[in-house]
Image: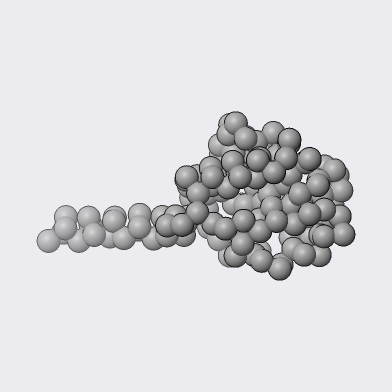
Length: 139
């Protein structure tokens, strides 16, 4: 079984690792599509801390991952499923129902996110920490 998942994978953390581990458990081969910088900024309204090339290298180094491809638009998912002979499409359950249109091509699985960890929260914690340190330094 061939599995695919999509994500930005910015500030790679344990939630990302657990997602990839669970994806790999669903099949023999795992393809991971990493959102490009341009796609993140124009379509997802996200600014990444790490450039796409670095995020792709990090994901590629994970033992569960067999192939890394760039994700440059929302519409590429159907083409990727066909091109890579995908049997299972996996995405976080915060997207529940959004990718059901792929069910004519493959199984669609929505996995729960890892409790207590998110990249957005991590970024907020970093900003808050540096803001607090800056206030202490100027006091």
